[in-house]
Image (cartoon, rainbow over the protein chains, first blue to last red):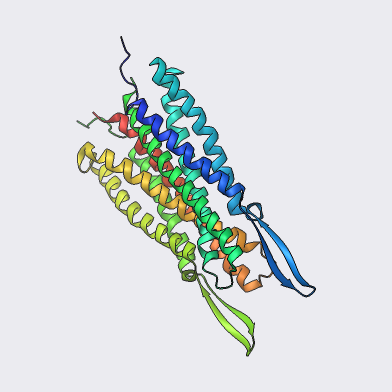
Length: 171
Length: 171
């Protein structure tokens, strides 16, 4: 006989949301990590090539860190959920409901702050009148990465709602 | 006879956390809204006075909006909690448990993204070598406002944990 459900939503739905989180974060991390531009600047000794990388900005480094932490956590949770879906048993029993609850909550805050920090720097930098096309391409890629991180945050917030609602299903 | 408690923590504890949220957000909003600096810039026609206000930056405008929304929500919730503490009855009954849950969750995300957007812009702007002392004072005040907004976020996240745990106390 199947045990009574101990989660608020079907584990298949939970799994789909985790997979969507994973995909968003993976694409976001790839875009941030590969975001590099070579800008030609005028100096007193002539033209110099300046290489701008994502790692020159703390906001983008935090974004990358948030994305990587999110991927690691989501892969782990996806493995647990697949185990649950395939065997019908929750790994670690219902004690994991609280771990899920706090884990999902903290992760969604990390992703939210990561995306917001990226937007905070990018949006106002993008408004400068003195940006050349290379800098604009760099900022547009940063914008795309922050947007995907934000989408990942939305999915992780949905996971967090699910794991919060599951609290009341504990015996 | 007093009704059984329908919240996970004592309403007095919940009230203290709401008040701490309110105080942090109020100071943060005051600092952001009054953050103005007059910078003397060199132009082709001589020195010009440039007035920089928080509203020149989208990140700081979003910070202010987040703080104001947070204050409005926290005042409302504090009023409800005071009513609960003084009468022993929850306004709206236990249906409000879900409203609290989603409200606290959304608010904590708004405050987290507000603080992170402020930090995202400020931290990297502060690293520029060309900042004069006026600009530095402006950025330091922005930093202080973002820090207080972040403290407000931490308290609202605690409120959100409380209202999530209260879900399992519903009859």
